[in-house]
Image (cartoon, rainbow over all chains, first blue to last red; front, top):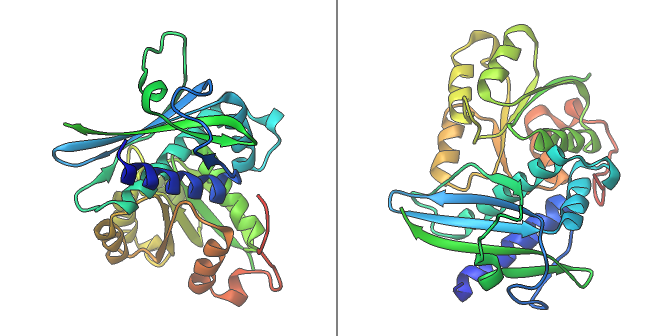
Length: 150
Length: 140
């Protein structure tokens, strides 16, 4: 991931997590492949010729905590629907923030998705190039941005 | 005086968060209705008096642009303030929504103070909010 893209991703993830999910994360303590994550959310920015795919993976513990913070409920009240819906909103806001930081002419946001990572998942992108963020000294999640041709 | 509010967003979680934000902002909330897209919102507006609409832009079935276009064509809702709460970063699209009659927009992520400030301007500080409510440092 290019330095500029990585810095934008750090800024937007920090802003969204702090403002809406009341979670302070830090970057740099861990590298790609550190941590084990259970949920993934994804959103794309699209124009006529390119697609920017932003993917976030988080641990279940972190997902449950930020969902509880987001909804103003206790962690033991968080159900799977709440959790996946909140992770979609996380991706949506990270995508929107990234969009605001690039030359936004011609780009539009796609529909966010989220899912529980299963054992069949063969995607190694996060393990190879994920930007890992930590909370309380433990890896909480990983982010990847990919510029693709349509 | 309290105000009936309609929150339009395809995310159930975001609808809950917006409602909670209104509550902690000191907004004089009457009945709060929810819709998951523009078409559902129009159906609700057929039978219910609503004083303020807070809507997302990106939604399935009918998005925010289609919603406000349809809304402004209807006599009963022509003057109802519509505020968009959105991740949209494209200035052209936001300006288009304002030209179609939106009263304002708030970008996600937002702080409760931002919602309060915008709604104060739109609804009137003394009419729309309980006096003396301080949202600084509040928690959801």
